[in-house]
Image (cartoon, rainbow, N blue to C red; front, side):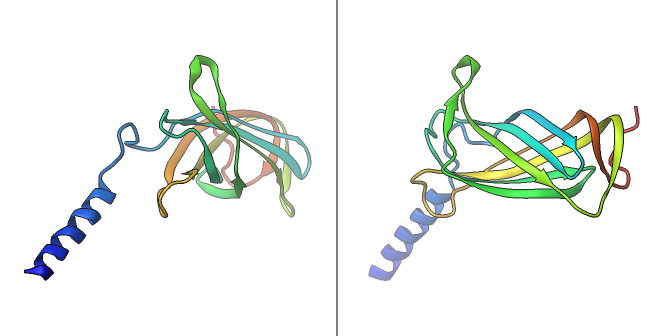
Length: 154
């Protein structure tokens, strides 16, 4: 009988860990994706992740940058500051320098198919709790590294 009681307790605990928290369904929203390649072999990435009100602080943010469906860069930001955006939403701002070698350079304005994805880990969250985010958009740049099929035809 004691084994059955412990088994029920273990099953209940396991089930509770899998119940989604309110307001955390689906990936977090991403805003203001910008990408700039101001000079050959250097660039900048910036985007913001919208946090639910129940997450006041973030311990870490892992991100990946994709160009035309191919991974171009990745990074980890420890203890990023959550700030208030317009409208009172809580945002984590991700800003990272980009560098590359052995790629050609494309002068002139072009649209790039840009994707960002990753996850944020809330401060003090149970081990394994990570909140995913992702976005895909087109960004107009004035120059870019030359990759096969990266430019979006307009």
